[in-house]
Image 1 (cartoon, rainbow, N blue to C red):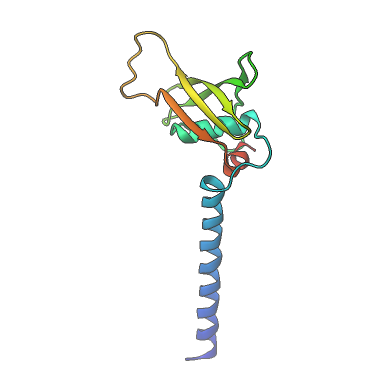
Image 2 (spheres, one colour):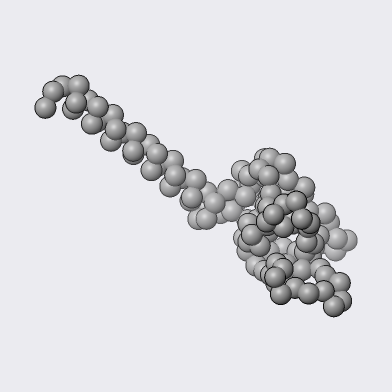
Length: 132
């Protein structure tokens, strides 16, 4: 084997290690690593959108709004087709990072193909990063 072929093989191995390492770090930030500190309302909105399969554009997130009572917010989540509409959720914080939410809908609304009515989750580091 020639010297340049050996170096090329080593370079390919290092590149593969970097790509796999970066991919693993991104996955861990989104799915495994908890949020740092107390997440803000934008990170809460990204977390809710992630759990409901809603759409959000990283860095351009509309934060959740306080709903009057301590720890309760109203968050809007865009449908996955992001051009069609939004859903509103009332969100209760459970501790610093975790939350539970309930869909706000009008009486008689047909929700068979809609978003989940109740959902729970926790804000992860990736949600904070995506929120900007």
